[in-house]
Length: 290
Length: 340
Image 1 (cartoon, rainbow over the protein chains, first blue to last red):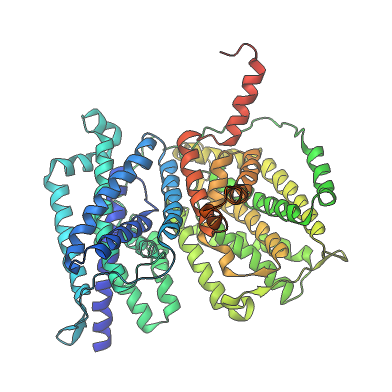
Image 2: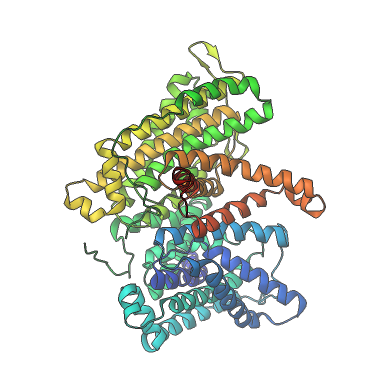
């Protein structure tokens, strides 16, 4: 019973990081109808940039959770301006291909610039294990929960109450009508990219601080991909919850099955979810008109 | 949403291929004219072209994006390797077997994911590629796990395939066969159904096209040809390792399609030549410049940067691909000197 509780809690902690990645995927998909296959690579780039800052200026770990999103927002805006905006009005297929191109390019450029060795993230969150009724947690794991909770609350409030959130929801429903209503669709896309990169920066830093800063960090984004499918590609908050589910599923297969199965359990979950409920648990069913 | 990148139109009439006799002659002559290094490149180009001709059936003609190219290529390669090396099957049995196994696997992957529209196939095929690598790693007795294993080169009708020239001829003949097969299917009912599904899925359904069946057939056909190319790769390579089949291979297929011109078979060939030779030309150029660039020349990462850059730049500035340059160049020549 204790083993099960341990698995579930540490699964939820891993899932919180997946959930942040899932939110990042969903933000872009919701606003632009594009799956950003470069999400993990964007996060990796931001982590490297953040680590570069922390190597020069010794700052406490918690400040990374403020600095990384800022670097992330800047990165997101730059990538949108350079790579995505020129493609406005082109079929979604073409833009998705561009994100695939961006992914391989970033992956290779990072190795060329920073080398391929693994390094520790310069700031650590502390190793003291905190115990809650028998279940031990690292500070980073608790931070991941807190960050996810704040991100969910912020996303909900922004989408629900702000003018920009309304514009985003309108664009997601019908881009052409939104344009006719005076919404600057390109600005919506830019903000979605900035927000997505900011959230994935948090995910990346939390993930890197428990593992390493290395050129295969982008795998975290890939592994988190099932989160947004389980939760619903067009549901930002659903994707966050999908991440928690994914983390627990992975940990349970790892704990009771074997480790090789753990690696691919998320992808098996994708296939299962697509067969039963193609739009994910919280996604909206869409109707196409001729 | 039309999923196509370019408005490649369905060829309604049968056009002869004027270059075919020249292509056959060139293929026969090449091993005598080229040195081993050039022949190696030629074989790689031909094998890659076969694989991408298959990929084009799915992504170019039916408008379904797949990131599972590397997975089906691996299925074909390992089917060939395992059947030829562990069970001693003859080549005339292993090559079709590789195609059939790849097609069957694709139906397994496609059945749940092709009922959905849009990008879901890209997602499930991405998942499939990850799963296949794990299966290969786990099936140690057959595949040698992470160490890989060496593949036997069997004989065809008693003629041993020892020389690289023989492999090249086999691959070249296969490419011609694959192009012939694909373009004939394109002109059939099925080919028209593929285009209809790509350009207006709902309308196709209304007009009586069995959309799911058309998609599944496109996927199976595409994977069979890709698996066949994988089998040839195993023959040529002689040693199989999971690392040969990473995601970068799928990206290479995507980039070839975009560079050549999505949906066009001559485009696939042109794109393959371009993408296989590009890293090599870059290596030579970097070496010629010398200095710190020469150190970069051999790096695997250069390939990644190039694939990415080529995909982004072509989509941005030349979404029709190389084949579009060819068409507009020919149109310009025809109007010359009245061009303005």
